[in-house]
Length: 162
Image 1 (tube, helix red, strand yellow):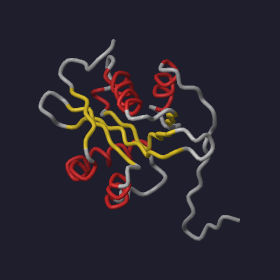
Image 2 (tube, one colour; image 1 turned 120 degrees about the vertical axis):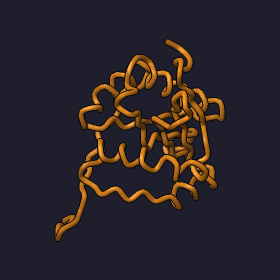
Image 3 (cartoon, rainbow, N blue to C red; image 1 turned 90 degrees about the vertical axis):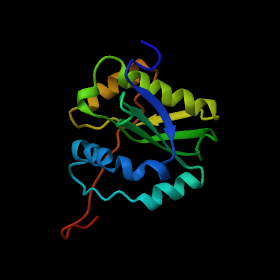
Image 4 (cartoon, one colour; image 1 turned 135 degrees about the horizontal axis):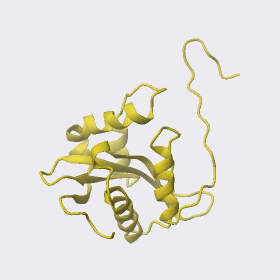
């Protein structure tokens, strides 16, 4: 159950060096989970955040070295608690790799790497799309607790917020 499953590798890599290679993987994630908003990933924002020490990315790679999953984190000091905080902005594993302990062990790997650099507060959002319930179950088994529900509204097509 622990460690990296055979045939896979887990790594922390630079957004600035992997963004273009992994763009289609990011798009697959958006198509599965972000159906109500357009996909318009801004490389410059993520690279700038990485350079400022406020973002990092981890990958799951298959035996051939191809990225098949990722976890992107936004990092900051939480202004409410003063703790070093990591918010998992995006977490994705291609469907065909959602078997066994790959996802579970990858998430533990990310937590351990972030903990080793001083992160003390971790936060994930589990989407309400079909895969969200499974992710929620994994998070609970890893010691996470549901603390809030996030509501979203996308304005457009003449709609106003008022």
